[in-house]
Image (cartoon, rainbow, N blue to C red; front, side):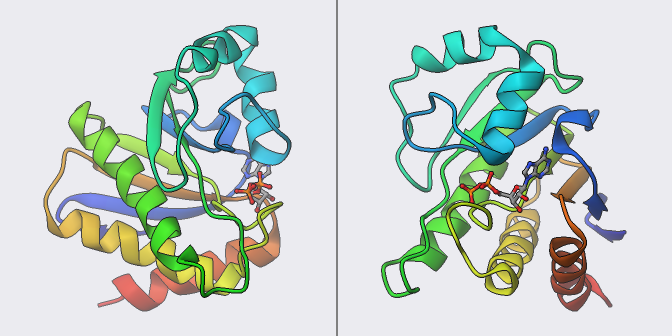
Length: 177
Ligand code: ADP
C-alpha cells in the first residue's frame, strides 16, 4: 500500500467483481456489448440490466471510457474502458493504454468518486505484454494523482500470481519513497 496526496494505492490478488468500491473498471471491447475474460465475469455478476444499459451507449472507442450503473455488483458504478489490442508496440498501444487508465480516472473524478478498482487492462485476450502494461498503469495513476482528485483508494486487481507480482513491482518502483 502506498499513499500519495491522501490516496492509497493497492495491488490486490483477487476477483474484481467482489470489490466493494464506488466503481470497478471493465476492460471491455469497443462494442460494449459484452465479451469474455473480465468483461464476461462483470456482466455475469451484474446481471442482464448491465447489458441493457450498455446497448444505449453506442459503443466506446479505444482509449475512452463510459460509465454505467453496477446493478447486482457490490460496486456502485462500472466504468467501461477499451484498451488497445497489442499489435507489436508501434501502433500507439502505449498511449492508448495510458488513455484508458486516464479517462477512467477522470470520469471517476468527475463523479466525485472515492474508490476505484482496475483489472489488468489489455493483458488478457488483447495480448499486451504484462510488464509493459504494469508500468503504464502505475504511471497513469501517479500522473493522475499529481493533478489532485477526490479519489482516496485506487486498487489494481490482478487475477493471477504473475500479474500480481508484476503490477506490485511497478507500483513499488514508482511510489516507494
Ligand atoms: P483484455 O481484452 O483487455 O485483454 P481480458 O478480460 O482478456 O481483457 O483480460 C484482462 C485481465 O483481466 C487478465 O489479466 C485476466 O486474467 C483478468 N481477469 C479476468 N477475469 C477477472 C476477474 N474476475 N477479476 C479480475 N481480473 C480478471
